[in-house]
Length: 324
Image (tube, rainbow, N blue to C red; front, side):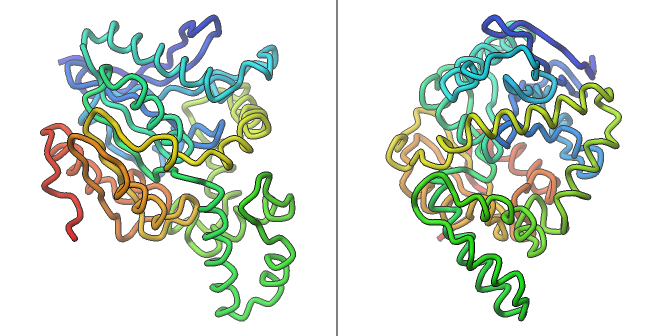
């Protein structure tokens, strides 16, 4: 048995890109994890909210072009596109297949990563045993409008008139881009209500920003690049992300599909993910509600996630999926 913990760099479509490779046993199946954002790797959250994914898989925590370990000030902005990221993800998949000698691997996308992941699964199903979407994106603009209505209602019930006023002055509609005032307010409002990154995270500053600076996985220059990459990627990808309606673009996948969603998730609305699941056609599919989670079930309810992965995903069944 051979374990692995490696911070690796390899050339992907002409650009040096970075990743963490972790696993208790390199003979286990390989999982490619597509992080959220756009441009926001959250590998560092494992120190606070360990997923245990590397007990089951050899995990490739790839940091996408222009993000984190893959950020470079010399990278032309015009190369950071959805299409290029999909080409990169396919190339990383093939690199992992070669390195670990596996014909197929598993694919997991979280949030923005699920936006990429479901598109990659649709175009190259032959590369993967299954696709796992966590906080699955469907049509993010519609999700933002639903989240806004929920937040406005909740702050009214709390009697927080200042926040109500700020929200009422920043109402989003089904058109991109979102109002700048809403963009500025969104993360604060979501985390105050426990519908952001995790149910117990009340501030994105203390819960994400400061945690990244405390991470031992990155050097100081890499931490600087992590945040530069986030702002670069959002500026180039966010509007397309919002405006793309995946419920119209992808309605069938030719491989097993598993969607995992937190019942308190309004960052990517639970109801929208569930509705998309009902519309998707696949040879096998399962939807899993995480009753105590917001946006990150693999961090918030890791034992249940690992059970689903072991008993359903690896076995090619959906016995643990929601019923009714």
